[in-house]
Image (cartoon, rainbow, N blue to C red; front, top):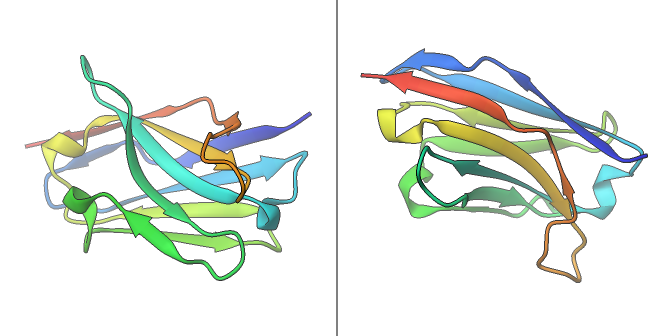
Length: 119
């Protein structure tokens, strides 16, 4: 059974840093493109960033570039999202997700965890 489990702090003030980790079981993480997505209250879920399956090539949405960093440890089967200079608009439920490199649809999802940034 595939599971993606997210960990990490969820409360911050504007300007603070937080780190979220995603631990995978039941799949070999190095075979997947890993991503973080988020959903703010009343809004649609949006892409935050992704990291490639081998070279670690990263992509980010424009609003988080320079503030968020994805990293992966294929040996530990984990993916981390480091967030700095947090803004209240970063508030939302953050999801870890996985897809194969041949398909743009994310097929495995974490349970989602809340990140709240106060001003």
